[in-house]
Length: 176
Image (cartoon, rainbow, N blue to C red; front, side):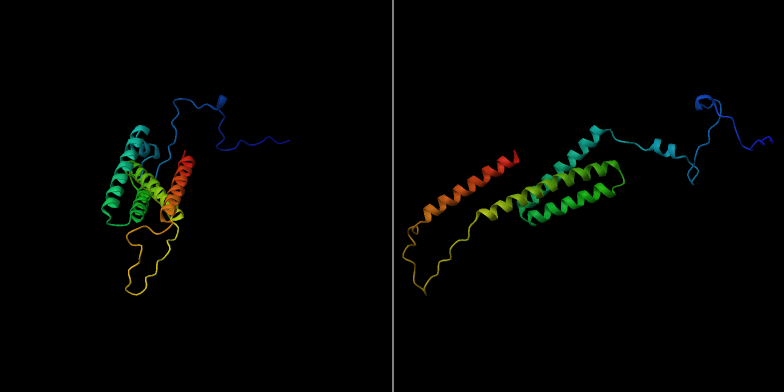
């Protein structure tokens, strides 16, 4: 049999796959000529505690802004909180720095929670309000019972209050 010719470029394997410490290693570089490791080392990363503080600051700011605008009644509160939640979510996704991402996450969470509470509250309010009977007036004649309550009005009001109380208790038990 013929002896095998030695292959070019074949290097003997090091024992236990260890390279000698004095051997230079090739570093991959980016097109600009700097290595990836150098770019990652210069990027400053916030510790988790600082990120949490920034997110809490964003949440407090969003809660105060939404509450103030809702109290002044400039824009409907659900619209305001929905817009603020959308802006916070957008900032959390596309922001260039960790600070703006953390603040955006806080804004999004606070406004989203307020919007959810408003939607739940309005849902229970619409369920608890029965349709009021329409009283038809005849011509220009004044109804005879304007100085007193109509018959059964007090009992109906008591029943509505009892239903509202029962629904709010059920909602608090579900939340707990």
